[in-house]
Image (cartoon, rainbow, N blue to C red):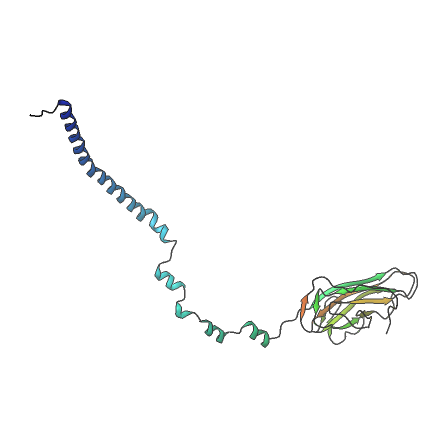
Length: 238
């Protein structure tokens, strides 16, 4: 029996053929547009972007002229042979000693002659050993171990030099002492100062000081200033 397609079926076949032909025709045009877009971005890269991007990086030639090659630097054994380590340098050279300086003022009201006025000074560091202490009254000769004046005090290593700039209503002996009130002594952290008064009136003395450690010195956790204790048995004048 012979089959005869309907008009509807023939129409569907014809429409399908037209769509397929159109798709084949459009594809080359789309490829051309993509090629032109790619060429446009290539021009933009070369003219607008490449120079700026190149500035962010060194070329190999530029890097070679700026930085040393492997043969231009020392290995650790070569450096150790050429330079001192910290231990070598510490053993070879004496550490530069710092001179510590400050001011002091000792004074108190007094109703009777012979009463004592007390004060203290603190270095702000703790010494490995107490320095040799000197008290230099106004007009007195500067002893060995000290130099300068009350305006510019200085001390040799291992010495504390207390310079006086003013004194009023105090006795001729003025003392710098350790905690045992031994004259011309100090402690590893500071010293006491005292003097008897000569009348029933306000007495004081003051000035500047300089101290240079004779050995190691470490920063004190606190200003370890000797505190004046009970007056019983104090002080003994030498």
